[in-house]
Amino acid sequence: MDKLILTTALTGAITVPTQTPHLPYTIEGIANDAIACAKAGSSSIHVHARNPENGHPSSDPEIVRSIVSRIKNGCDAIICITTGGGMGMTPQERLRGAALCQPELASFNLGSMNFSMHPVARRYQPEDWKFDWELGYVEGTKDFIFRNTFGDMEVFISTMKEHDIKPEFEAYDVGHLYNLKFLEKSGLIQPPYWIQFVLGVLGGLAATPEDLITMKQTADRLFGSEGYRWSVIGVGYPMEFNMAAMAIMMGGHVRVGLEDNVFVRRRELARNVDLVEKVKRIAAEFEREIATPAEAREMLRLKGMDAVNF
Picture 1 (cartoon, rainbow, N blue to C red):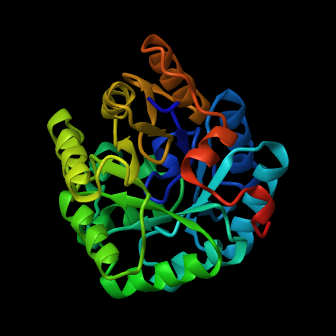
Picture 2: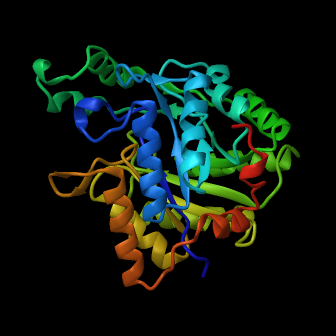
């Protein structure tokens, strides 16, 4: 069984500052969280940018470069820059950070879908919101379609090939795995693939044992056990840790972070590093070693940090 690749997704574009005071959104805050998580054992850091003044998701490539440069200077973790972006961003805007920085990894979403967190708005009173933009943003996800058409995906593939960026394929549903197979049959991509099973988003598959097994069995059938490596994201608490335990047992890999879940225990808000340390404890109970960044780079066949543009 491979050593465990542990990815930390620090901020995302859906979690809002009102949900937790621990969500980093300044350049220094995001970078410092990344370095702390890497020192705690995270092999890979998944980076979204935020407006450092108010925490709003941002596609500004210079903010992205400032964040990832600081991370690179502070640790040797793999850096994966999102192309998921945030609500309202065009596909071209979502690519700007990855195209400028040319990281080892960039996320690649495998299909359009409803993507919503609007029920979160019911948890807070009007006076609870930290920033003026948050309530409208959260409620707006009720009518949000996360666009990833086949035309968009061809643009993502072209950009990543141009800059020697390995895609981290994000699959929220079984159909997304078939989309990946279609891209392969079209000659646009070749295995082996690095796939994140994203389970628990409202609009995609749930974060249940049955759904994880379905994703794994489907990927095995489409790509063969040697054609890909997989990791799982469980959105929410306790799903993040339930999915992590299953992946650790099944030979998969794990993503944690405040992008996906803000609790380390029931009603106890987490820092990103708390989530890393908890998964490390779970892995230790199963005697599954954590991969160093160098070991994860070898497993994923990455170009190395010396070939990035930051």
